[in-house]
Image 1 (cartoon, rainbow, N blue to C red):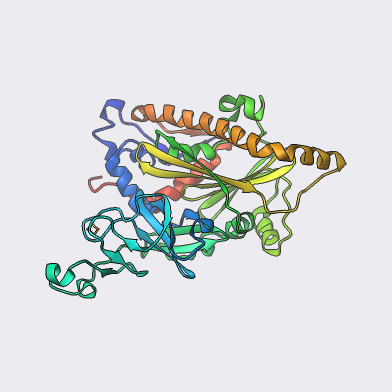
Image 2: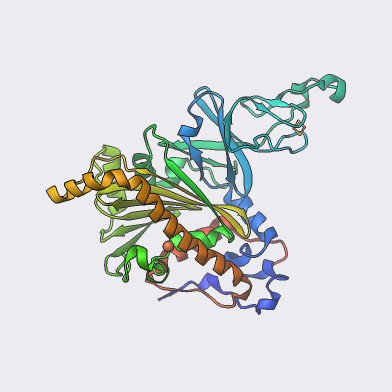
Length: 393
Ligand code: FES
Ligand SMILES: [Fe+2]
C-alpha cells in the first residue's frame, strides 16, 4: 500500500475555508479561488496542449484556448504560429470572443490592431489622444511560447524555470503522440463541463481502482485492469499504463513510432503533466486514439475536452474472423463510440462533482494502493512545479 506522505490534511473541516492556505499543497487549490490562481500561475509555465493544427491551417486562422487559468489564443501568420494572452493591452477587453475564426488581431472595444509580434501598430487617433505614434506607445500583448507535436499545438508562458523544448519535455511521449496525432484530418471533439476542480478529474484518469465501482457496465464486473497485468511506467513528469508490458516498453514504442513500424496491440494510456491523457483503445477491431484534457477554469470548474480519431495505423486483424467482424462493425462505430465515451465520461464526471462537495471535509491522507500509484507520481510533480502557495505559511 502506498500512502502518499505529502497528502496529509489534519485540520478540522470547519477551519478549512479560513485556512485553505495552510492546507497541504495538493489540496489547497481545490477549495480556494486564491490558491487556484497561484497554482495556475505556475502550471501555465509548463507545456500544455492548446489545440490542433487543423484549426489554424490557413493564414489568419486563430483559435481560443486556456492556459494557466487564463484565456489565450493562437494564430497563424503565413507559416508561423504565434500565441498571446487574450486581453487587449489598452483596457483588457478580450480580443477573441469566439472559439475560432480568421482575421487580424483587432480589438472590438476601440479598434486597436496588433501585429504578429503582439505590438499595437494601429491605434485610432493615436497622436491626437496619446501624444505619440503607436510604435512609440509600445503597447504589447503578452506572448506565449508555441511548439507543435504532429498536429498538436502546445503553449506555455515564458519563464526562466522551464526552458526545455517540447520534445525534451515530452521525452519518448513526443514520438508516440506525434505518430498517433499526425495527418490533416479534423478530429472529433466533445466538450463537457465538470463542476469540480481539474485535479479531481485528472486523478480519476490516473486511477484504475475505481473501474468496477464506477463503470460496472462499461468494463465488466471485474474491470479491464487485473493487478498482475497492469504495468505503470514513469518518464520525465509523465506516466503510462501498458497492458502486460515489460521495462523499456515506452522507449521501444517511441522507437517504433519514429521508424513508422508501430502497430497497435493493446489498450494503453499515457498521462502528460499537467492535464493531458492520451488513450489508445480498440472498438470491434478498429483502433482509436483519444485525448482527454482537464482544462482548469476555476477552482471548482473544469472543461473536459475529449478529442478522438481513428488511429493512423494499418488495421491489425489477428485472423479472418477478426477481419470480418471489423468490416461489419466499422460503419456503426461513428455512432457507437461516442455513446460509449459519453457514458464513461458522465460516470467519471459525476464522481468528481460528488468529491468536490466533500473537499472541506478532507482531514487525513489519501490511502493510495497499487492501482493509484500514478496519483502519487502526479502529486510529486505538482509539488515541484507549483511549489509553495501563499505568502503566510
Ligand atoms: S480595450 Fe482594446 S482597444 Fe480599447
Ligand atoms: Fe473512469
